[in-house]
Amino acid sequence: MALESKNKVDPAFSLSSMTDVIFLLLIFFMLTSSAVTPTGVPISTPTSKSVKIEMQKVAVTITKDLRFFVNGQAVSDMEMLEMRLRQLLSTQQEGEGVVVLHIDKEVPTQYLVEVAGIANSLKARVSVAAQPK
Image 1 (cartoon, rainbow, N blue to C red):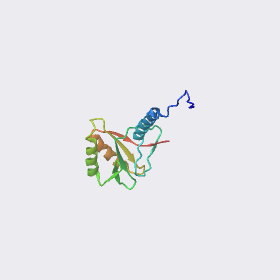
Image 2: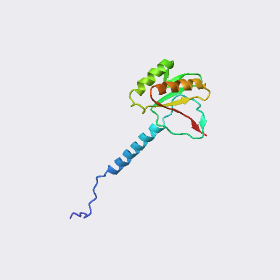
Image 3: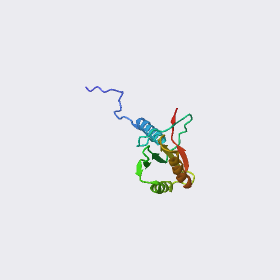
Image 4: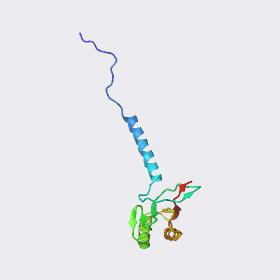
């Protein structure tokens, strides 16, 4: 005599809700990782009372020993810096390019003005990175 249960349990497990959660986490981390992109070059940025977070498209870093980096890649001189910026900003629409300057606080202001002038001549917005007080 075979006894059978009237309540059958379905052994299949639905992963659709877990997939939705993973997808939402992926979108969250993709959006937040583009807002905070650390530079690979260690510098000591100046401090400011008000710091505005800017979506970084092109990062120019100047170290205290006056070495230049564009998006983490070393550049030998100002001419190469201008060529590299022109190349990176050519893919952006006019007025949409943003150059964020990560400049060590011990670097003379002349270098800040020169790099900002190059970026301005390429019709890019210029922003200086600073740490909040």
